[in-house]
Image (cartoon, rainbow, N blue to C red):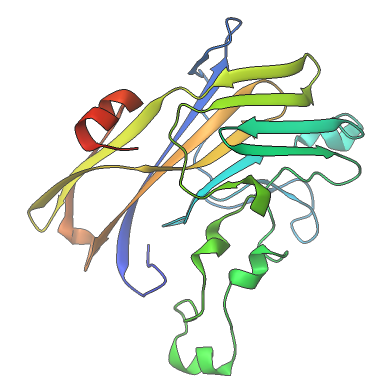
Length: 245
């Protein structure tokens, strides 16, 4: 990809989907949610809500926590009229949901997200196009409502409590405690780093989550990046070796 400064970046994106077993533990799901190359909408892309956000982003200045909207809800089902409570780490949100789903991704053209897109005027056309505007703000890449953004990223072992979303009532679990380690080299300069866990998607049809880790590798040319490896490790191991997440 090309970042907001016009520099090449090789972006490692890892997406893992986990299901809740009867014992209350998240296990790797047999059906993995694919990396989303474009937004998926609930209906007409011109007017409907985003159901699944695009993963093709080079950097997020925080972590998105979203509850996806279900396609089944358009058939008259769903939690509308209920009070929904989302708790994860320090994040707390409780709202009664009526006609509009307010826990899902924000459209690119809706506020407050649209305020961070930058200025696309004649000056931009003359001096920067096709690069992003000089006043582009990385907060545009955050898709969750502002009260569902974790500013310091997710650690990966946070306790999650959901009330009112599923028919069975309150559901609680811990995130799987995983970290993604990225290793490789750029022009024979070797690196090993821990990727940022910057997206948590909670699926509404059954207790299941998808986590997205991201690590941008900066380079002059993509061909300079070689031998990139990704490993999923226990968070505790990553903390012991790298001091993070």
